[in-house]
Image 1 (spheres, rainbow, N blue to C red):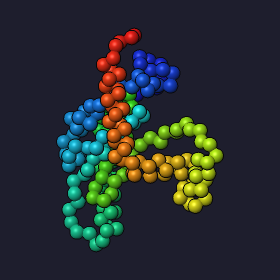
Image 2: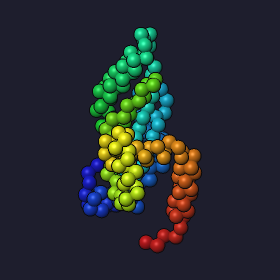
Image 3: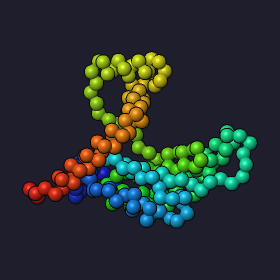
Image 4: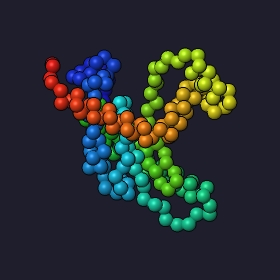
Length: 188
């Protein structure tokens, strides 16, 4: 989907308040994807900028000498899936981007291997005071991250892993607020 001026879009593309709802994205992708791509319904994760679609590929057959060989075979199968489905994935993504106003990224998992491809890396504007910068700088100095940006991403992942229940409750509450807001009077 192109960026620019147009219905529901400002100068920089879709504005947050104007984004089409993606509440039905998981169902849409389940119905739209070709049969046989995945062993079940794909995992569909939506945020303001991107829809990530990750499916599980059918199990590998045969024996493997060790875990490293099995992991290499899984990675190879995911690579084959990526290459063989590229044109269809591009077309499905184009349709979804038009429908939902967000970019689509893909991934696949097989056994213990998961690979994401065509995912966005979105810059986030933030203003940090010295104590927060010192935390990031400590992570960089300790070799946990190569830069402040990578340290911030690491910290966000860590919080997400340890606060799943709380974040889930928060998302549910925000969804209820959105529902109530949608039921409110039309002032426009």
